[in-house]
Structure formats: structure tokens, C-alpha cells
Amino acid sequence: MAAGPLWYTFRDTWIEKEGQIVRLSFWEEVYDGIQPSADMIAGSLVIKDNLPPLVETPTPGPTPSPTLFPASMILHFENDVVAFDYLKDMKVYAANDSTFQVYPDSKLGDDLVVGLGDERFTSFDKYYRSIRILRQQIPAGSNLEAIMFDTYREAEKKFPQENGILNANGVITFNGFTAVQRTYRVYSGEPAYELRDIWTQKDNEIFIIAIWTEYTNPEDFAAFEAGADLLLQSLHIK
Image (cartoon, rainbow, N blue to C red; front, side, top):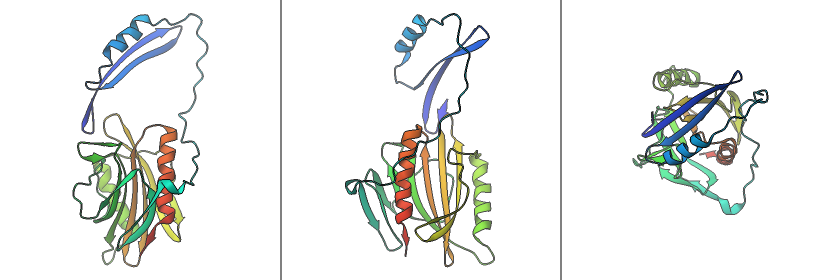
């Protein structure tokens, strides 16, 4: 199966016993070499008799993460449009740097103001964990709501959207700005991507803060979102 630019091999074995189904799953990125270990586990597997009743539990959401970071982890960025603080494990890209590419690659905004990418989440020259600040002019006769509607209508054609883990759509405030937040999940192959867009207006321009990441686990996701909140709450649009 393809997942973005990567290929994965999935091997599932379904076993029925005492009215319950046990699935043995071996999933690997191509060439990871998991097969010998998978064969050893499958060959030694014993499903016990008198299975306890299955108790279904919901998928855990992100656990609360501290929003305060030590000064040694924080850097400051400023150009002629914006200024903000950010965590130093993110690499900053200038607006005119064509090497900065993100995935999913649906379009937001007209112009990139600044981009940040986590180099632990990159493949084929695209970042799978990124924060971008984008901008665009509001045409005469239009408004923020209409532009949002058209943007997501086009994006849905390429990446259908589902409710994400955050599920926090609506009006928010950050550092003196009032904004509209949209949170959603898209898929490309197997990985899920959690997307969070914050739309705000200043004069006759729209600014979009796009916080996008491939989903990993609740703790890592919460830590990334806390770092994004650090940037958001410190953001100054000049």
C-alpha cells in the first residue's frame, strides 16, 4: 500500500475462537526486514482457552501537555511581516525558499510568510510535520468566510476531511487576535494527518496559521500542539 511517497506491506491473519476474533497484524515499511520476527511470533502464538470478555475502550486522545517550556528550548523569529517564538527543533524557512514543501499538499493562502518543519518528519523533500504562516488579499466583494468555504471545497476534492482528534472548530482568540479555527483529519494511504488551520483578518488581508502533522501517538501529538500554541500565543502580525 502507498502512503504518500512511501510503500508499506500489510499482513493480517484473522483467527476466530470462542466467538471472538483475534487479528495478528504485521505492518512494515518496505525493506524494514520484519518478516523473520513476524514468522517467529506467529509460529509460537498460543491463544488460551476461556478467553475473558472483550471490553471495548475508545482510542485515547492527546494527554494534557505543559505549555511552558524552558528558555533553552525556545528561539525567536522576526521578519518584516511577523514575529513569534518557536521550539528550536523546528527548522525555519524563508518565504521565497522553494525547498520548503509540505504534505498533504492541498493549497492554503496565496503567499507563504514563513514556514517551519520538523526534520524528523520528512521524506522525498516534503515535511509531514509543519507550521506555516500564509497570507492573501481579500478581493473586492468577498470576505473571510467566503474564502474559507471555497478553499476547503477545493481541498476536499483531493483529501476528503473527517473529524480530527482536536475537534475544535469555531472562534478562538490568540495574542489579541480573534480568529476562526478549523481542525480536521485527512488520510493519504494508511497514515492519518491531523490538520489545524487558524484564519484571522488584519485590514484587507487574511493570515492563515496552518499546523499540520502526521499522527504518531497521543503524547507526541500533544507535545507538538503545545509547541504550536507557544508560537500562536506569541505571534505578532506587524
